[in-house]
Length: 539
Image (cartoon, rainbow, N blue to C red; front, side):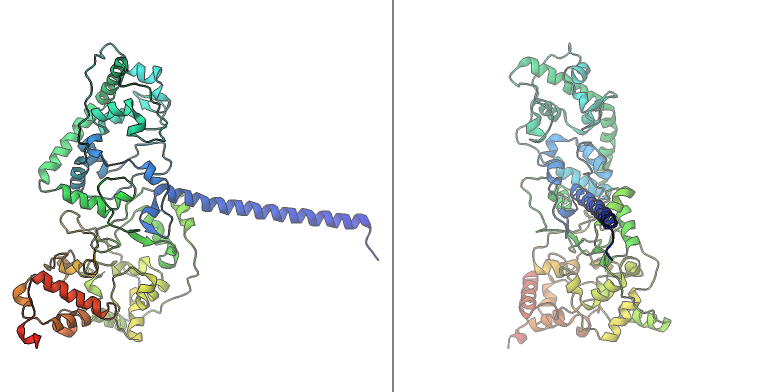
């Protein structure tokens, strides 16, 4: 028997309401999750994470928000640069979440970088015209007549929508303040909202600008005097710091990816930090949250060993950290490595200390090199699945790694995987000092793979040499290498130090490098020593 029409209509209406409710919920959730993703993308774009990391689109904002440093020596007081680099703080209040991060530079590193930035000056100095501005009330001109306080704070008045003018006299040189007021579009950016009020050919305009400039500079005199004392003290403490050291620091930290710097080229083709597209597959979430709160060194000598690049601290808020965490892709982490016995632990440690070459590049429990990540922190940082893959298929999960391929049997590999996944007290590695250690652009296979220990010039004094129990070979020693045949050098590179009765920390490169590449290394060593193989080896 068919249902009454009104019953069918009520069922239809109910179904329609349920459908609409479900559709509404779906749209609401889609908007919510879409907004969450969008918020993360916006924040990451504003912070400029893609300027260093692969797996993220490069920022389309940061280059316009970060100041052009091509004329930084003409623009900024060096004492302010020194203080600011030690502890970056907010200057512009109109650039969203974009900010200058803290690279945790030591005083000598900051001084070297300050000297470099202070050396960047325009060829012709800025000259402020002589003008009588004593009859003008500069503060009234700034706050009332030209209404600068609509965007700026000065003398406790105004709105903080842009730069605080009370600090401009500390940051900027008098000539730059004058020029910026006269022609803001030329000295700030084409997009600046600051109006162009004045004409350089009008004497009254010049008088007003001079009055404003003097007032702004006078506001910063007291604070700048204190900063100058600190800067002079640093100059006395570190007299050997150089402009070239500062230049290398600027380029090693990839500052040029955010700041424009004329006549300088980046050390890095695309990026100088890890690919973040599968970060949650690699690292444990609690560690990642802690790392975002306070970054600590993972690769003390740089993502590309020898460059000295660092992960800076953005002083992220809790909400910003949660937003960034929402960006990372989730993965099902099913791999759990089996625990091992005390006997197996001792066996693994014996292999690492006395047989394998791992500790030539990695530290473990206070021993070993400083090229790759500290293995003491592996269990705290990495997932079991990633530990497993990183040992089995290093160059699949880290294509850019310089880690040589090792011929390790399956049982030993499983033992090492389980050993590294054990809980242990994390260590506190430090970054290398960027002035006392040699940092360089990676320009060749040798500089990427060998210079860490043997030095960029082959003198055996690479930055990793200090952490090794045996000094690396000095390729500039012509007396020694004139007794070594090319075949002997080739075999040492191919098979590693152990098989040639050298230290086992010297890894074998034969499974990673091609025959032609090793031959190139032999040729490079011959260039370093400026010597030939012995005559008996020529037969």
